[in-house]
Structure formats: C-alpha cells, structure tokens
Amino acid sequence: MVEELLLGDNPFIGVSHLAQAKARESVGMGVDSFVKVVTTAWESGATGFTFSTHPTNLEILRGLAGDDRGVLTRLNYYPLVPYGMGYVRASNVTGLPGLGKMILKRSLTKMSSLGWLVKAAIGLNPSILLAMQLAEDLAPFMEVLPRQRVRAVLLHEVLTEVLVAHDAPQIYETLRDYLRSSYGVEVGLETRNIHHLKLFMEKHGLRIPYIMTPMNPLGYQMTPDRERAEKAIRLLGGQSRIIAINILASGALSLEEAIKYILKFDPYGVAVGTSKAWRARENFKRLRDAVTGRS
Image (cartoon, rainbow, N blue to C red; front, top):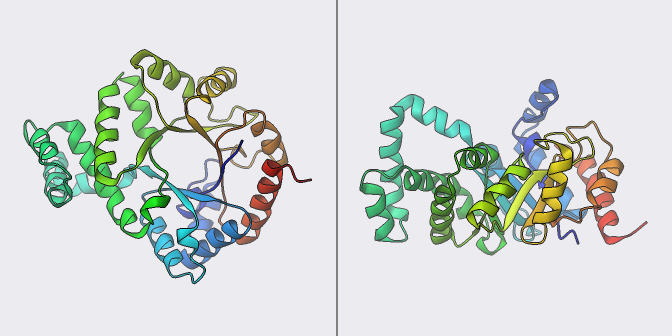
C-alpha cells in the first residue's frame, strides 16, 4: 500500500534532465511561488516533501513556517544529502585540507559524543569527517523542520553509487550511526542502480530502511536495465520502504501511464515534482484518487 505521496524539489532548484530552458524558467519563479506549490500539493493530497539541502529549499521551508494553517507541521520530510555544489565551492576557497578543518571546527559544538570527536581527530578519519559534513548540511534544515516529521535522511545517489562501487559498507554504517546519534533519524539511500545495491546489501547483511529509486515503464534511469531493477524492487520491497522517483521519465510519460505502472509494485512512497501550483493540485489529486481506489 502506498503510504506517502511526496512532492519532489527538482523544479525548485533548476534540475530538469531533459530541458535546461525549462529548468532555468522554474528557478526564476521565486520562493513565494514555490511555497504556494507546496501548500497546494498538501491541500490536494501530498503527505510529504523530499528535497536536497539546497539554499532555496531552506527558504521554502522557512516560508512554510509562516503559513497560518500549520502546513510545515503536517507534512513528512525526506531530505537528501549531500548537496554536492556546497562541497565544490568550499573546497575551491579553502582547498581540501582547509575543508576538513572547517568541517571539524563547525562540528565541535554539535558533537553528541566525545567518542566521535576522538575518532575524527585520530588521523582525521575521512568517514567521520564526511559524516560531520552531512550533519552540517542538515543542521539549518533540522532547526526549521518539526523533528518528529523527519521520517528519514537519504544519502544522495552521488554518494550511494560510490559506496556500492567501492564495496564500502563501513562508510554507510559510519554515516548512518553518526546521523542517528546527531538527529535521531533513520538513514536510507537514493540510487539509480538498485540491482547492484541489492547485491551489496546481501553481501554485507545490510538492512536499508528506505530506498529511493527511479521507477517508470520506459526504464529511464533504471540501471543496469529495467528488468533487473524491477526484480530488485520486488525483492527489496519486503524489507525496505521503496520510494519511487522519476515516475514520469522527465515528462516522457503521462501521469496515467506512470500510475498504472507504479501500482503494480505497491511501493511505500511515490514522488513527483512540479513548479506550478495548478499542476500540483491536478497531479496529487489524481495520485491520491489512484492509491485510494477512487474512480
């Protein structure tokens, strides 16, 4: 049974896999219009918001905090970390050694345990430094969000695929444990290669509570191919909460085609993004009606 209908943030931060002009147009719309999109999505059946730790999303959440209907406290949240450009900009200014020192310094006041500090300081453990940076990325968002509504933090695919490719379960476990101790949240993964993620999990006996992955009948961004991705989704669905993304294949499919396909798998959550309030109203009403069996 689909439990979560999530608004995605790609149109808010200028991400469009097929149309860069469309992406630039969305960014120019402004935070106030994006706040309206989120509130309209909620009014129309959306239960949550999934977003990267991009500055625009922080402003959207702050805007929601001022809504007199309490929309901020009525949605569930699934933030993704890291926001990659933040690392690039910081390292350009300070260099990688300076970035490491900055992460450590900023994290000192947020440490939940002296043990983490000791582990980080001895040899500047890169896994713990990365965990500190992720917590630093999350910090301003967690100050705004109602903590009980943050269902999970998801590691972005740029990190997930590296962990799987380098067969590094210990890094995932370090990040998971640090974020749990810092914020008391579950830690899941976003991936475009759920087949190999499944093999990785089986090899190391890992249980990932939430997995976000593309799902659409065209097999768009479903690596290595749709058939193996579908098999992995079905097998992992019994132990992980699967959240479907890219269901419209960046606009190549109609919502009806996407819904018909998605409901065959009965995922935990479905995410769809838009930068227009009228489309949020239409899409989430149709999604809500589909998952509740309304005609």
